[in-house]
Length: 543
Picture 1 (tube, one colour):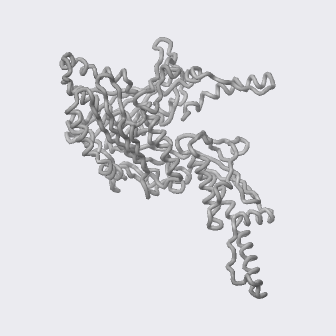
Picture 2 (spheres, helix red, strand yellow):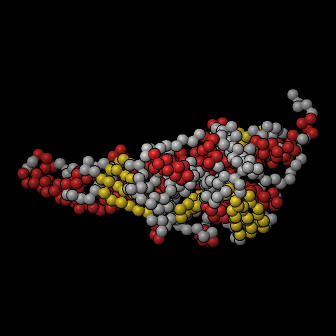
Picture 3 (cartoon, rainbow, N blue to C red):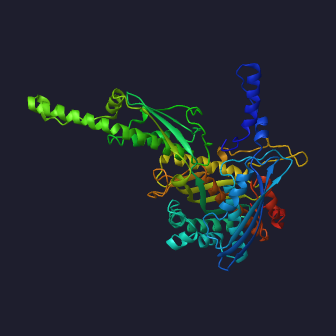
């Protein structure tokens, strides 16, 4: 549910627990989709106002920003969004003077919920809106305003932005490289040429940088070693399709393999479902760092096992050397053959025979030296085509470059980025939360009213690549991948806005306008009203 069910299930769990206690039988509850959506309710609605000071060049000198969010009838996770928006607002830009505030408001609506990238994605939309407004006011292209205000890739600028080595700042580097690789200048010229020739179909293109801050929450692991060399891992994270167990298995195979210099066969590593009597006081699996925390706590447990097994390995090696010396003394036919390397399975069997403790626990404390809050970086470019009469949008191409540092598993991280970007498209263009203005009841409680993206809404061309050779991450030099790419979907929103602006300009309307998310067909048609009222549309179209 990407956070949407962090708190609400406690209500259902208490009802089931009460019934189970009263009747003394197992009880299970099932919700139909409409009831489920009414309980989860949707993301918090936000409204932002800003004042910005900028030079004629487009360089931003100061920003005052005020945000208001509705948390519904209870605080829930509203406090998290309330905290995140001001912290995430600056994105990958350097704002020398900024004052950002956020306030929560109660309403008669259901308790609003968190979902993938809560607060961060809204902050990204806000910041790109501000950039777009500065571009309009100064007459400088938005692309150049973005470039001008990005944090520079030098020590002085990085220090001024209060970044650390753990952040491994790469956004400006990726921007410069991808601008050339994606041929942005030529594509922008092609978009302008297309728009000059077409009145009712317009294209837009937008390239944006991204910053996403994460924290590795506390996590514990239990690693059990068996005499046959197999391993059973129980950690405090939940595998919900994000590949946490695959990454943990890789780390366990690597760390235990340090004993003999050969990684374990990943098929020898199994997992037990998370259980509170094995890993107590587990933190929620979220914030994009569940995998990192589970990997590090498991690695530490393996480190303990390796230290215990080292004397046993040395003893086996000693015995092997003694046996070889005896062979040579006896003149055996095998005396000239090299000593066979000791395998991990042999050490495990010997460890059991030696009565070694075959279990170890590891813990990531999220405090002191274990505290790891860092920023993730990325760059995205999206090109769209808009039908100015119907409001239909086709995403022609999206290119993403993401810095996962030294990825624990590139296939998983790219898959996470793909799904994240697709989910963000829904938030940018389709998934509108509709509430009854009188009762506050959720109206969009099914797919008839709520429209998640379908295959037709995915970019015709979607390219994703991971930055290589950045080793700034905390756990084996890796970084998170589950939520950060969501913020790169602002490239979709502002590419659509650019296409709408081109259509309005053709109709003689060059006024500044803002876009709200989701920018649904209805909202797009409202912004395209000047096009439909243009006199040229009252004349027959040329054959």
